[in-house]
Every structure is written in C-alpha cells, then in structure tokens.
Image (cartoon, rainbow, N blue to C red; front, side):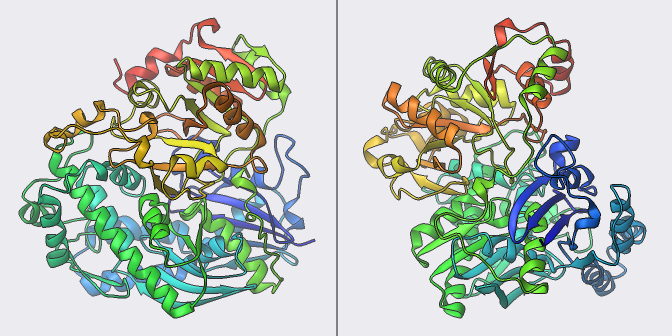
Amino acid sequence: MSKILGISAFYHDSAAALIIDGEIVAAAQEERFTRRKHDPSFPRQAIRFSLGFQNGNGPSWPLSDLDAVVFYEKPFLKFERLLETYYAFAPRGLRQFLSSIPVWVKEKLFIKKVIGDELNQLGRLDREKTKLLFSEHHLSHAASAFYPSPFGEAAILTLDGVGEWATASIAYGKGREITIQKELNFPHSLGLLYSAFTYYTGFKVNSGEYKLMGLSPYGDPDSGRVQKMMDLIYTHLLEMKEDGSLWLNHEYFDYLVGLNMVKEKKWKSLFGFPPRRPEGEITQEYCDLAMAIQLVTEEMILRMAREAKRLTGAPFLCLAGGVALNCVANGKLWKARIFDDLWIQPAAGDAGGALGAALAAYHLYFEKDRQVCHAADGMKGSLLGPDFTMQDIRSMARDHRAVYRELNEDPLLEEVVALLDQGYVVGWYQGRMEWGPRALGNRSILGDARKPEMQKRMNLKIKFREGFRPFAPSLLHEMAPVYFEEGVASPYMLMIDYVKGERRRPLPADYQTLPWLEKLHFLRSDLPAVTHLDYSARVQTVHSDSNPRYYRLIQKFKERTSCGVILNTSFNVRGEPIVCTPEDAYRCFMRTEMDYLVIRNFLFNKREQPPWEEKQTWREEYGLD
C-alpha cells in the first residue's frame, strides 16, 4: 500500500493532501483549522487531519507509514529567480531585497530541514523509508488537473502569478505521463497582470481577484470607455502574441523591485484616475476598468487554449493555477468549443499544489499506473475535508446551551425546504468539508434564488461584504438546460452560464446610464438573487452520487415550489475562512442575521438561542454598527 503526503506552504493557502495507492483520501487547507484566511504557515493541522489523527476520520496513519512527503515546488529554483531579479535591477529593489531575503535565509532556503523539523513534531518520520521530494510548481498544478480528471488524454493549461520561473504552461497528459510542451516565464505573467488591476481597483492581491471578476459586469460596454481602456492596456501595458504569450511593459509595473504592484503615478496618468483605496467608493470608472481587464484576460486564455490544442491535438483540456478560478473566462472557454470538454481542479490555486505534488510523485517518480474515473472524476465531489460525529455536535450545543431539535432526514429536509420557501436564510452544515475555495453544499449558506431581496440581504446582513458580489445557483444537474443557455455541467462552481432568454426580465432604456449601485435594484430574471448584471451565474450542478443529501434537498424544494434552484454561498463572513467545525458554524450563525442553522440532523432556530455575548464586539470590529 503506497501512501504519499503532499504539502504546500510558505506563500499563501498552505494545505496538505494524502493519497493511498493513487486514490485521494483527504485534503484540507490550513486556514480552516487556524481560522486565519489564506494562512501560509506550515500545515500542521491539515497534516494531522489528512493522516487521520482527529475526529475519527478513518484509520490513523503514522508518519512512519508514509512512502513519501512531497513539497509542491522547488525552493532553490525560486530563490535563483529572486536573486537574478534583484541582481538585474540593482540597486533598485533594495527595500524588497532587505525585507524578503532574511525570510528566505531563515525559513524557505532550508526548506528540507524545516519540513523535517515540523514533521518530527507530529510523529516519527522514517528517513530510511520515507522520501522527501520536491515537485516543480507548475508540474504540481498540471498533475492536480490531469490525474483526477475523467480524461485518459488531455491538454493541460496552468496559469498563475508565478511559480519558480514559469507563470503559465501548456502540457500534454496521457496515461500516467505528463510532458511540458511550452512555458511562459517571469516577469511576464497573466496572473500578475490581473493582480495589478486587482490592486488598482482597491482589492487585496492574492485574495481579491474574484472581487475584480465580480465587479466586471458593472462596466458599461456601450460607453466607449471600456474599449478605450482596453486599447490603452494593449498599447502601453502589454504585447499579446497570437499564441497567448505576453510581454509586460515594466515601466508601468512595480512588483519586480518595489513593494507595490504598479507605478501609481504612471497608471493615473494613463487611465485618468487614481487607484481606489481599500474600502473606498466604487465609481463607474473602476467598474469599466474591471470589465476591460476581464475581457483582455479572456482573450489571452482563449489564445492559450488554441495554442494548447495546436501543440497537443488532444480532445480535452484540464486547467489549474489561480487564474483557472476565473469562472467567467472558463465559461467563455467552454462556449468557444476549442476542446470537446474541459475539467478544472476545484482547488486550482496554491492549495491544490499539495494534491498535485503527491499525485506527480505517485505517477511520475514511483511510476505507478493511472486508473481513470471516466464516469465522473477522482475528486469524490471535492468533499475531502474533516467530518464530525453526532456526539461532537451535541457537545458543542451543550457548551453553548444551544437549543435544537433532532430530526430524521425526510422531516428535516421538508422543514428546511419550507423555511427557504418562506424567505428564511439557512446555514447548512453536512458531512465532510469541501476542498477548494467553493462551498458545494456541505459548508453553505442557503436562500431562495427567486426572491430579489435575498441578494442584498445576504451581502449586507449575513456576509458583511460589498453589495455587488454575486451568489451562485445550486441546481439539480439535469435541470441545467432548463434554466441556462449552455446547460453546462459545473459540479465545482467553476464556470458561468447565462440565464435563458425567456427567463430574463427586460431592463429600462436608461439602464446603462445609472450609477452601478442603482443597477442592483432591477429584477434580472426568474432567479434574481443568483443572476448577475450580464445575466450570468456561477453555476453549481448537484449530482445525487456525489452529494445525495444536498441533491435531495434541492429536489424537495423543486417539488414544493416547481423551482429546481436554490442560492448557495460559502458558510463564512467577510475576512474569515469557510467554517470547519460545528463550533465554527454555530459562532458564525450567532454573529450574523442567519435565521436557522442545520448541522447534520440538528436544527437550530435563531429566536430560541441564548444571548450571544460576542456578537456586539464582533460587529464593532467589522464597523457594522
């Protein structure tokens, strides 16, 4: 029995994943345990979970049983890139050099010793048996995308900010082999370009890119300003080749030698307005800029995909890397029909590198054959995190003097469906936690997608986040063609689709001239709470084999309302990771305006709970009063 542990750490979204004989057994991000969003630290708790050390999740594997521990990138190659960059631009970049090199010398440069020391705190590592391996960053991404996919042969496209040197790669996968065909290298990077615009529009780099994507539909494509901004991007910021490769003009960027992403004065002169400060007002010009860079990004991804098709001739495409989380671009890629089908790793960012590193070692280093799961994929619905027992839930409830009712499955689902139909918001906590940034029906907050007020209420009263942010529809997979134009299968909420024309509501003639915030007040479809301004939706198609209870819930909602769609958003609030434990779920429930909470078979009514002392302090911290 071959057991391999994959690790990603020390940049952002550290994680651990365990595979046994090529099967993905467990995977989780460290942030879910430490409650520090995008936690970059060594994933001690994620490793403990993955090896079965807590909460009764199957057998407990001691470290001495492992055949290999695999780190998701090669630190010496990354250090080489940093030194060459500093040398090339010296004496500029001294501040960045002085801030980053001590960290490398203390922690990252001697990563082998760091990993060994950290693992020794968790148990005894058999150095004779257990190999410590290092996979290249983009190979880890490629492996995470190809090996769990349902394809025996595929092109693989990886896109992110930067790994060691590569910022994008095209690879070819067949059987157990992956061959890199082409790479784009630092400092030219689609991911860093998108992050630069994330920074300029006032969002946080490495975590706010999805906000930029969500803001882009508020741009006005008919005003002429979006096209003018795109022309400025193509003329001054980058040169894009037919194969999707790009050259960035670093007279406008600061990430090579400075502490910011862009040279703000030059960007202000170019676009005519200053960078938006975090939490500052979002005016139309920032919406238009978001739309411009989103359209540029989509064009580059389409060109890269065509090049991948030309190089490999493969019928299918797999994607990973942080840019692969851009579900709008993924939807456009699907619609372009360059490939017969595509598959995206649910944890496409750096966390997924932990899984990819383990899989790469199994198939490439140990030369083990691959078993393709043609029916679906090898991700088990991406429900790979910790689960908790009924006793765990009762203990949590007792500690908080929480009031609940315990119901069997059928009456529980009937009651929850009735609550959703009446407009209540329900925290929904079931089974194993999701792997990746999307809540897929096990750590979710649910609402009625038909109610137009639900989108605003969810954002402002429950998630405490920007009002423009869209929500996802969860729907029975067989209903996708009924509600959406492409009817695309999207089990991991990684592609957009467009609401069918007959379900759209007409917009007023002066719609585009309205301030972006006023546009929120218009009903956009039969599913207004999950329909974005451009009639798009980030779809999750739910299958009975991967998540039977969630499927049955939506099915019963359809029986009651004739609507096979509900609103699904992640079970967390702004600035916090998705909840992991029953304790996390109850705390989040009590801090917000959620009406009901379901943990397994336990139903909690907010009105029946004892007073929550932490609520006011927490609201004051977020500036909500």
